[in-house]
Length: 374
Image 1: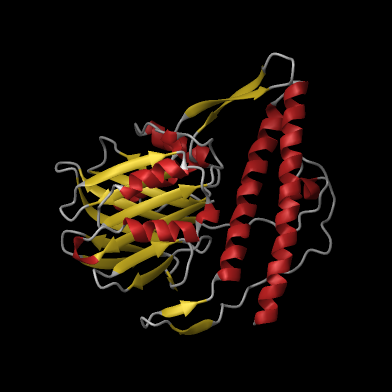
Image 2: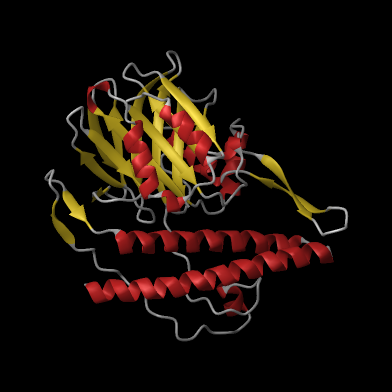
């Protein structure tokens, strides 16, 4: 789970204060990996990243750009490492432009697309080896296994770069996504466009804050405002100072199974069916009503109460991330023959199953509260 904030202020005034305020509002979406792009009126830009909140906020405080794209994450596909933070840079000889991409969501089975990208000459900047080590008091640390890891968001980032340049007809990944892409002209190394959009799996809202020293337009993962329409890619052209949009299938969405019966730490619902078992008493699909819209605020902008809906979206997204992790560890368990490694994986999967059940309990409470209000 991650958080996105894009803020632009009129009259060339620094926008950092509003970015930090928005981050404080949605900090629960992740505080273990940070990065931002500061964009100036002439198209020049700076990129900063860090793994510590205090450090990134110090860097933000000295950035006087009137336009900032900020990202904060709760790492899922990788550890909290500098080179795995967003924005992710996509730069390749076959591309006419460079791209800086931030993403909130999960990409399903990214390895298949990674192989396709690498066959085209793309080098994954987040690719690294991960060593799992067991440490016991009074004993030497023991290396259990090594595996290759990369940030699944880099798969999405490369897909967007190829799509925006017309080198592929559609985005080929599956999963939840809200995304902002900064497009940079290679010859001048200056920002030309900013693209943003989402699918139905992830939130993105827009609002305008009035200020005597320059109004501020904000796009963020949480907070009051108007939801960005799903399945629409919006493009801000900084050269012509115009905004256009078009319908785009921004990744195929999927929903995690809820109420999965606990059978074992490494078998899922599909395994139950193959083994002849039936899942009973599963609820029908629930469609939540749209939250009631409140009156306009003192600036004349619509205000929607997203408090419960945001929490439901966050938990459902977290549930999908847990399912993705379980799927990965189940695969590792199947191909592993070492008994000690299997025990480590079994403990990891059991922990994820417990976390999964706790999320479902909380979701039940929120669904009940949401229905009682509507």
